[in-house]
Length: 212
Image 1: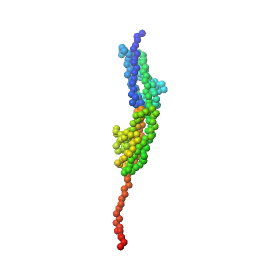
Image 2: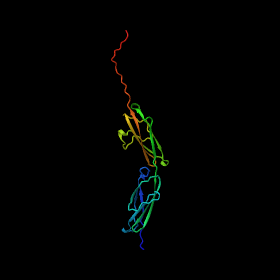
Image 3: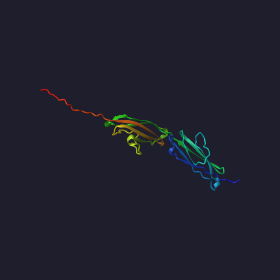
Image 4: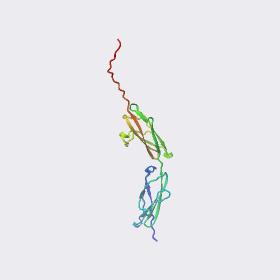
């Protein structure tokens, strides 16, 4: 019986989108046939197991697939390749889907202040993920309605203070919080800057009579 070289299964993936919210794991097969193989021993099918309840995908010729996970934890991914001669090989890797922090709310010292004396302090309430570790970042924008959300935030402090506005109206404050795992959550709050009252003193047209 003729012998055939066994194909070599291999794949890679990008972990930059491995947080639960918005995760999209792109699996890229970089499989090769064995040394000395001929065109008759090319890969004919790829069978992916994404590590979800042990369910494998249908055999296909797709070398690149995208997986979206609905739960956190370690996922055991497996790729089985089969060539035209029926020879197969298996490659296994794991990916850890991490939980996102929860930005519950953003509070202000006083949500409604007067224009002449306004000084806002903002404090976020966050549910941290235990494994988040150090390296958390905060990105604040203080006036979305006027300036929009540009790439450069107005503050990188965890709880910015003494934020003043030079105009009246409703101000939308936005925070993007990212934990040490690189997972993030976004929150907004609204504060109001009120006009100062105007005092008007009018002159009286009545004559003032003094005693003799």
